[in-house]
Length: 149
Image (cartoon, rainbow, N blue to C red; front, side, top):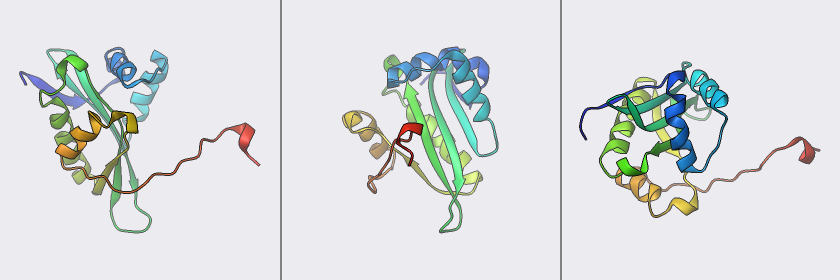
């Protein structure tokens, strides 16, 4: 890992983050991505990028919420991607270490991340190798105006 800087993202990073979102399988308009980076610059959120010589080669987005049932905050990784040609070089681990320091300083007692079952051969192995443990089962319901009673 040569000259990688982990720093907070700005809206100007959106064009560089866009291909990383596409690698994850998500598509947003550039203006929407810029807006989300701005939203994630608030006190409970952050987007970190791995910058190599001015090129963004990875990112992680994070949201924090206070726990209702226990002391402390819950941190949630909402998205993470490392450029395919830069994977397995310690960049993801460096992003997570910086994020975990940030989370501890913000009073988080744990961090969670969800990762689709189709990512079991890459992302799941990565998170397990970084000390994350498979925990509980997640339930979700997709909402729309049409299915509200």
